[in-house]
Image 1: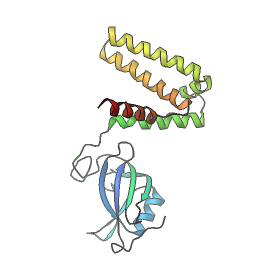
Image 2: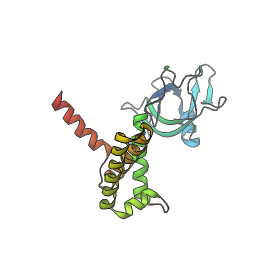
Image 3: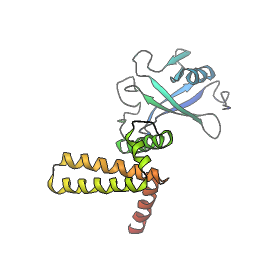
Image 4: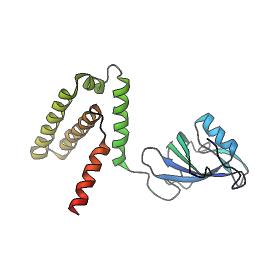
Length: 200
């Protein structure tokens, strides 16, 4: 990746984003050395403009940022770095340096879908997902039907806790079914958005 470190006198802004929640966690600056060290170690390393030296985020607090991916913008002078944070990011004790909670629980469905897709590709032994994929679409479809019935029964006659449990089973098996057919949750989202526009 060719980066333009000269535009800001040897530094590049680095936007740090949580890989799971997509929340922007902080903004830091990197020089060429801190960029290279981040790539090498897998821990996000910045250049401190006040101390004039490299610093690994979290080296004192333990709240490190584990590197997932790095992308540059269209001018090659800004970085978007996706990370897995090990704790709160801001030095004042907040989840983010912008005072926001680092919570977007709905996005866990993407994490779950990615995991199920990896199971479909790797097919590890002793995995429940692998067993489902091996049995094929008809079996998976039957499981979706069974889980739907169980969720309905709990919704009518059970507790909220049992309903949530069975509905979670339903969502999991539905994602497995989508993946088995080469589809994604995003296909459902597109259809729902289309219907929403028609009805708005």
